[in-house]
Image (cartoon, rainbow, N blue to C red):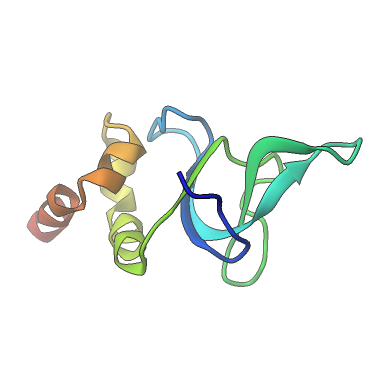
Length: 104
């Protein structure tokens, strides 16, 4: 996977498994979380359009996405949160998510 650059449009989940009942977001990559010793951790920091951090402790999984995928995920949040499939399933099956959104 390509290394993320600050400002990349991303999809991130609190944990690797992407449980839909845990925190997940669409936003902009801001860098890696730095510990109290100044060392980068393996947690991704993601900000909203105003520059505010979504999660002070970062996200464990984060991938660059296209604006069209991001828009679809945001529209589908109510469906994703109610389901049992990983949020990452929907990132890789946008056609199915779009079909569900259109039915609703």
